Length: 610
Image 1 (cartoon, one colour):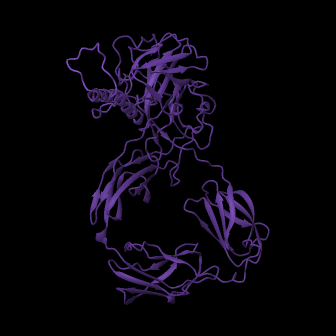
Image 2 (cartoon, helix red, strand yellow):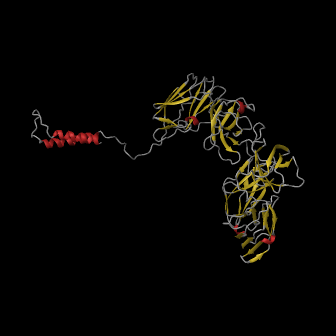
Image 3 (tube, helix red, strand yellow):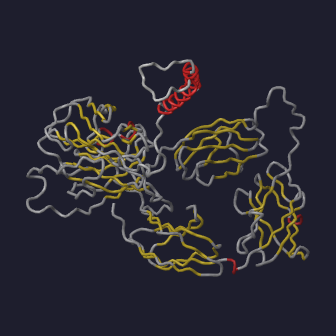
């Protein structure tokens, strides 16, 4: 900009001394200053005429995806013998996540190379193609325009190395077996050699990938019976070869059907008229009605049943923590070198039964030699010191000084205490002794009330108050120092808790008349919160009306599990044994419960087809 201005100034300065040639017949002779002014104006016009051209602002945004102009060879071509395909578009395009989105059915050993040239996409095939085979190259939404990134949805290119293009299809949806949510990015694979172990050993002949709704469609298939198997593939090799991979499968062999295309001639698709099928394809006469068969697969991860001890360590003095690979059934330990004559420890199980805590005190020996057992089988042998290792240079003069025992209440201080649940005190360690005289309970802050505190279970880390507090009352609990002594000899400091109890009018009820889908196994009826976390459950065996009472106002969900093996929990399936995951049913929408109100919601279920 600055250089152009300097040029104009110099040009105008030179013009001031210019003389007008005599050959030009002007009606008047302009002055040098007038000539300079005219040349300056001409220079300015020249400068602005050379400026950058800016597209006009405003106008509608381009929301149209690229459109296919032509391709070499044409889509749906037969007798294909080449190794390159080129597709031309009406505008420049780009490829987004092509490695993740490109899918070829049947799968190739070497994925084709896809590249751009001008307004076209070139597909270079890297291997020899199978004879008499229909290929489907699926791009997902990888092909987009370069201006607004508009994608061609579900773009695919089909060709055949035989005399015709196969025209049959299967479609369906993959859901999570437990949550029933759609599963995205799952490969649905079809095998024409349907022996049981084929997903472990062979690549499929047809494959598709589920979308955000968990839906899939495998088109241009040949006739026959196929094994249908779904895989959330962690290493992208189309084989079920990793223990953490999730799977789903159809119980019976699947036969593809003719399904009328839903979108014919949509922007960006290559859709010339379908070539005629061979005699074993479509029947003679009018085109058949679209087939409504829709396959639903339930994705699960097979249970890892190989049990072992993964770690064991002395967490602190008097506490040994043992972790297991999978949830245990009936884990326990026993001393094998010098067996104890009396019980020497308190076992504590985690909520998921995958961790065992061993509490102990006052052991005169330095080491333990323990066998770890579960379900009647010895898993491991552990040698464990009974005292933490002392750090070099550490001052141990205060080693015997015990810190106060930490206590907490079993309710949130910001909430009222349910009148129908016992008040509880939770200890950091198992309790050895309770001194009832060190507890003082007052109603309405000043009136003494009688209460007894006692252990809840064998671990003795929670003590409960008896009787229950009165409805709609205000309480103050004072726990004096020394009220509780743990197994290490530590005692508590003063604990003061103030709380108010609720009343029946603060709660509502949910009444569920349930019609079970089958009657040959028990069911687990579960009440869930808005986040699908379990609140309560009950085992039911027949149609009937079931009630969840004393519910706070809010939204609740209901889940029903068909407990086929009657073990009280949901179990996934096993492919080689032909066992599907236990069926799960979820009420279609959350149910609102209000205070002092009964909500009745009938629920009749149909058997699930798999």
